[in-house]
Image 1 (cartoon, each protein chain N blue to C red):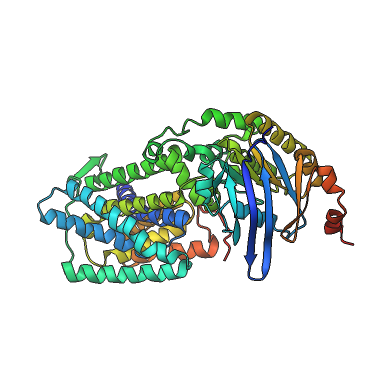
Image 2 (cartoon, one colour; image 1 turned 180 degrees about the vertical axis):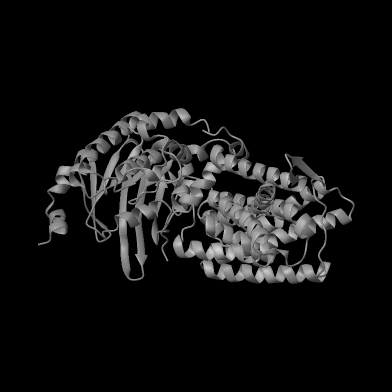
Length: 291
Length: 250
């Protein structure tokens, strides 16, 4: 019983990190019709930015804040301006190819600059474990759940309870109508890109201490975030959360009870099952698009 | 006696797609508080005319003036901020938002500054106005439900209420009765009359429902093949032989 609870907690913590990246996927898709296959690299780059900050003697929190600002400029506004805006009018496919190319370019550049070695990033949470009734849970897992949970709740509150959040939802649900009603669609879409960039930095802060910062770390998290978004429902932010947590928990359970060798296949099996049985995702809604 | 200056002046608007002239030299004016109806068979260029006025497509030639200002080719965003609203033939509500949030979203961008809106109260100070519109459009019992979960007729009412939320000076309504239960058509007409009286806005209404448009609009324009075939009082337009021929054929 103790093992199961520990597995569930640590799986949920890992899943929450996938969910943050998946949330970015769904937000970009809903607001701008963009599928970003460089999402994993968007998590990897801030990890190296934070490492660079630490190399200059900055504390983790300051390196994190600077990484947030840099990510907002480069991975948010810059990505939108330089990659998305010129290509989006040509449809989804050119953008998919461009983001795949961007992912390769970013990986190669980081490998050239930081080597192919894995680099440890200090955890923002204390080491050690909390023991309650014989169940041990690491402070890192508790901190990850708390931070990811706070980010998700804060984001949901922002989207549902603020004027700007409602405008962003309006743009995601009906861009043309939003434009006619005077909502600044371009600005709302920019906000989504900025939010996605900051979510990627938080994901990097949470995942790099455990899985280490490496030039190809984005391959795994990008793919799992994409699967999580599909599993939960690409058009639902709640779906991304469910998908992420489901993958994280099942990976842990399969790794422990069956074999670690099958752990990496969990997301793919779930993804295939959902695509075959419920293509709109577990919480998603079927939608029509003109092609 | 000086004539009341026009609110909207559409001057010789033309829109061509290759050799096809969708709108071919249409001119008309709308005075403050006036309701103008636009009728015509399918494909006569009514919606293209609306889209040209509203900046959704750029006219090939001609100009549109609003309160004396040239607004030709301005974006829908710029027009909305000048007090021009519209509804579409198809539903444009935000299905995932509640009815009340739909109404607030429709007007929230018209006051304050961008940073101010970022931190504004959730109802953007529009809660009372939204509740008044909900009351007027008899949507109180569904005010907190997602708009997408309501019937087509209810969504149509929300759609129209949204266009009036920011108290626009001019609203262009594109087939407000399309797909609406016949029992709701009279209610819709009464609502528009009431809004015209209480808010004093001007409306231009495209509609195929002749009974609706003849009772609502004191001035009617009939378009055929991109041109104005007849205009004037509803009864005169309705009995115009050229209009009858355009609708019924020889």
